[in-house]
Amino acid sequence: ATAPATATPPASQTTVALPISKMAIIYTDEFLDPKTGILKFTSVLNKLNGEFQKTKDDITAMQNRGQALETEINKLRDAPAGTPIDQPALQAKIDQLEQLKKDIQRKAEDAQTAYNKRRAELFQPLENEVRAALEAFAKARGINAIIDGATVPLLYFAENTNITRAFIADFNSKNPVAAATTPQ
Image (cartoon, rainbow, N blue to C red):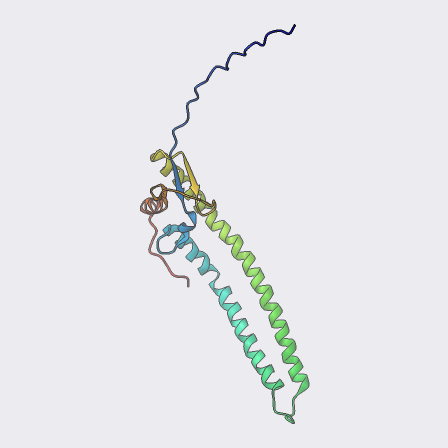
């Protein structure tokens, strides 16, 4: 004979308190908008660009010299048949152009490296300041989580959860910037 099946008592139902949370969406890419973004970002970017304006101008001047040299070379190459061409002078111009192209590339690469390094030096403290301000902004409004819509694809969100404009306005009002200067 088999033993009768015994019913297992149901597991006790435990009530778990669910957290009450308030989430918000922010678009951090809007912080960089020169007209409607965080003014300190624009100010720092203007400072950074001003520091590298001379280098940019030097590279532009080199490129202009290269274009002028290329025009001279093409004129010499396209001379009417029978026109005497000073081949050594033409070759010297071609060599000069090739060297100039290499110099431009090197200078541009060096400038980009220096620019990126300086950008990190200038922007890191500001990014930390903005992060701290965003945390304080959220805590003051009872927001438990903020999702960056600039980095996370959102399928749906209610527009009233977007705090981007409100945060930018709050940050700008608490962190005034001296009159914006244009790069020199």
